[in-house]
Image (tube, rainbow, N blue to C red; front, side, top):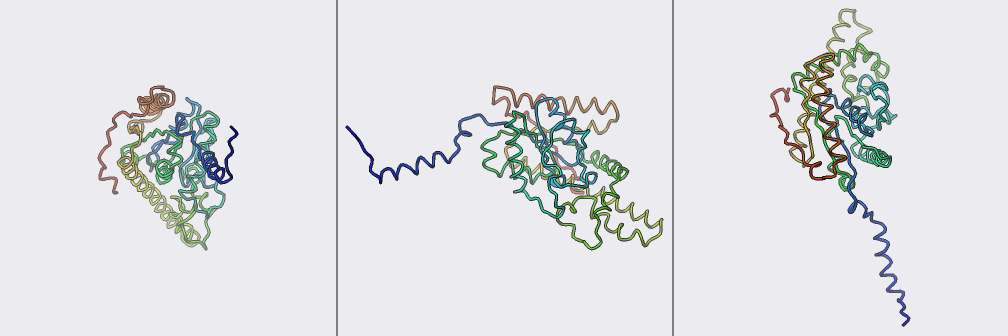
Length: 321
């Protein structure tokens, strides 16, 4: 018997076929790709850990620091150098050319998703590292497509706040010696007083405003004092930033079911030289590498995604400093 469908029936069937083609059903049936996040307050060694991991397993790093996405102010924003990268490809560093543009969470989510997809397509592990927790939350928690496609493992690099504050002061001193003041002077504009957008929000820029406006009209002694005050303010604001980042990590951990491993690097910061290197390998890089290898390669999925119990320290009074 010859059966024919009427035109009306064909019209009813066609949209259903189109709908099935429009929805990408692959993520529902294939195993999710893996993504590693490295989070923590500023100065704790997130970039170093991400690079260490990427030298031990085929991986590339995606920056999620909201100031490092801008081109310029490499010292102020503490961008990793070519030497520090050790050949590991980095994404979203210095990609925003307009210093006045506001790179939003939506911007990060869009560009980071593209970067992750391209890294996965090269059969490499994406490692997203940086201290802008709002970016991380926007991607890992608020992007349905990302959550559908990727399985995530989080490393929280933690350092005791008093120890971290001491390290931050030393790091600011090194940044000043490396040319921080002249770097900011090159972008200083006496006609601009708005430090609430673009790269001019970076700690180290607004703090030097008064010094630059006064240095040509005061004596050497006053000039030196004004610079000391500015540097002290940079240090203070960096410590405040570290406290806020730590508070945000606590909130995110309590709010979302993240597969998070807390890595306590405090002992590393209490040592120096070869002893610090040995402590870093023993307490940070080594254990983290083992966790990543298990997460990426272990066929027992449950063993890979269930984190070991991690002690979440009570928020010290220093957090509200």
